[in-house]
Length: 243
Image (tube, rainbow, N blue to C red; front, side, top):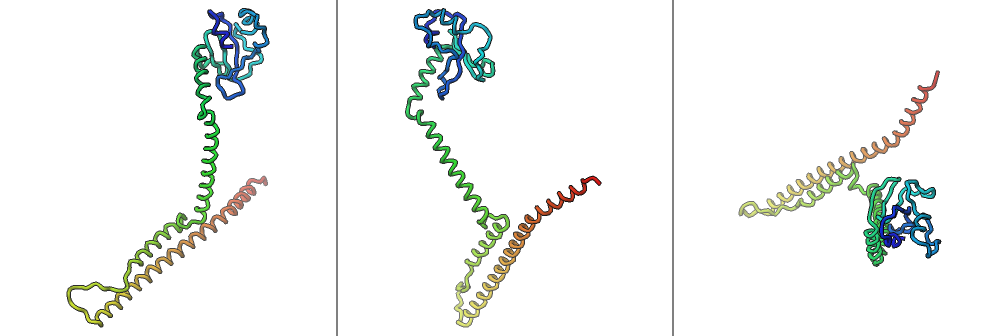
């Protein structure tokens, strides 16, 4: 069809309507007439008079929102009956030639399949990540709103206790200590360490007890909220009933 117009010596003012084809090829345009049924012996003028348009009326069988017109001057793209783009016949023909050359390469032929596989794999990974995140949020105490801070403080207390020493071997000055003096010093050191451990243990117990009570309070609040909402709705419905 395009070669027919390219071979015309001058513009006669006639044009034809085309619509996109069923393939994904943007250059696969289907004319609204089947020009192949005409005898090849017909001259150009008879062909144009029978099948081309030279007025502003739109064909009755043209229902597409996007369509094209082709004439000796070139292609015009219409969307909702409004012209949005024009390209000459020769430029359109060259673009189609280069497009089909590029699209015949294996990379571009398989690009759509690769893209679908890549998107599918990304979706699977994303769903798996969301699933694991949900499990961690439910079962991992370290990121819990209540126990997260408690566990970090408890860990710091354990690190502090790990650095404690029950034997003091530091030598103050050059004076030699007697066995009794050294033993008494170690007893005092152990008692001091035991006191520190007891204090940190008591602090940890209080923190965990407070966290457990707060968690239980939150659970009770979540259980009572639906009941309170239902009671409010019932009360509102009763007050709105006509007396």
